[in-house]
Length: 393
Image (cartoon, rainbow, N blue to C red; front, side, top):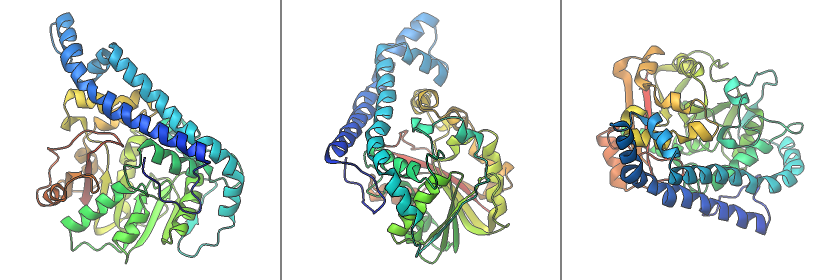
């Protein structure tokens, strides 16, 4: 695992704790890439032929593949290792965080902001899709507060996610938003947003890059959870980046109509719900200025995948506390974007090669010839092209 960029609020731990984190990260990458890399061969050589022999046909869709793969010892072993290693990720970070929590909260509470701001709403009701489960099996999810003015969930997410993806998104864990920003600037060079909003910003690692990409713009981020926003504000200040954070529900934002030129998100919709998703898209339409754009990096729809890839990517729906995952990937983004008020001809979608882990020519080709035909299915931690869609208002 490469080294994470250090700032004054990052909690890493002692020498031994950091060694454990590095070990767990490497173990997860081994399970994901080496052991997980054998899943397709097991399916094609053993599971699929057995299913066909027993049923007189091949499996019909991802659900039957899931059931058949989990009946095979290789599939069960891989799945069990994935679950246990996910828990080990958070367990490797928690001791140092619990020890640092009182001092961390005190320092963030006494922060003298010089660049941006944070606005919290103590009366905001946490959406049920966040309160109901610990997404990614992260203890306490994004919103739990264990002390007054607590920011520790943000610190847990900052370090834990870096261990989780093995630093694959870069030292600042910002590979996705940098990829998105670079794509927008390359494909639409005349688009110069003056006011930008990120939905579901958590600790701001996907918000800060927009400050660098569009230095003339005013950048905002919203999230429903106060602990991650407190941490996001402190982190942005430590990085000397002017970002304005707000505690809001993306289904019912407090911003006035036509407030933003660009509204975007990075892998958040699948953590919401069937009810919330269309409401959020409608809010994007309302809050966008005429001529503005929304852009969302998300999971690839299963319509763009083989049945096996759909099974592989939807594993998280069963075992990683992401109940909307499978439903979301079965939905057609274009249908829901147009229902939210955007015109069909203003909709776009593309598979963007990761900026850090793909040849430059592949990225440039996606700018010249946008397509979703070459999507490589992957989780965070694997090389991938990121499915992205949006629309102009």
